Image (cartoon, rainbow, N blue to C red; front, side):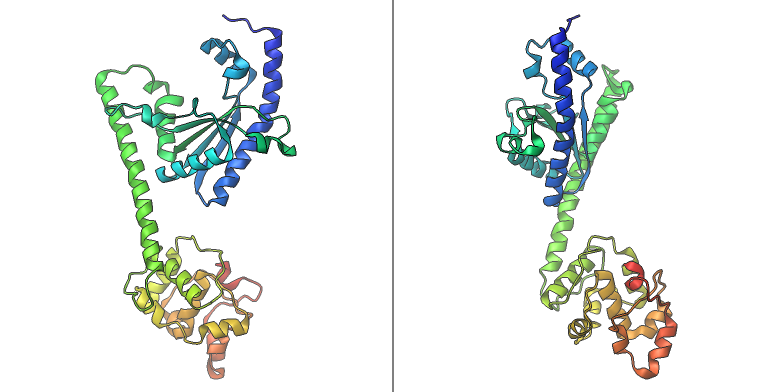
Length: 349
């Protein structure tokens, strides 16, 4: 047993206090980077080692200069959805922090070609001179911390097979070890499969967005519908709120199907020729949900009322919809829908 001197103990206590602030700061920086670069993530988790944990590591590793050799008092884990984003986040880490490349590694690269196992990317960093000079990071300059980047499925494998579950640790009987590796292989294949599918979805949405007007014999789905509406609004200078651009649009697609519209070409045909002028006249800026529902109602509000089941209430303080209804039909139109003058358009969608 290595006995730590009182001086060592004092060093650890002082360092842990600084690292507690550092951990919070690094987590905040990384979350900010992910948000700014529109990279979706499951979690960014930070932890600061306890004094007992630091002392155990110093003893286990037989460190002679622990103040320089212990690099993970602050540890941050970034859990992403797709493998492609691991590289994007890795690039952000390299650009945002001072990375010690000699101590950083890609654990998947350490696996031999016939092995399946724990995969993630590890970085040993400090804040870098420029950031460490800022007042909010006073006292944190030169402190090392570790960042681990992995996907959801890589995280699942590590948690199940290595980190916490004693059943899968150590040497297993050959049959069981083979089964464990097969299961790990399935997770790796699924990881790559989700990444590939994500790219295909992005490519499909891009193709829809770049199609010329009139080339819309495409089935309506949760990818094609928002891509079409966003493109149409941009081409026609129609105000479109950013809220709701990334929903699944299942309810809206159901309403379109009940109304009798299943293809983008059908949707495009019901858009009124003066719709943009009317929106400008009445100061309308709506969401994807709002514009598409407007188009259906303006096209044939009686058919909409008869065929479509809705779970929202209607508000039209700006008068856009009523401007398309004749005076003779105005009361019937009002009676056909549930109105709420104090509620957002179409129940807040």
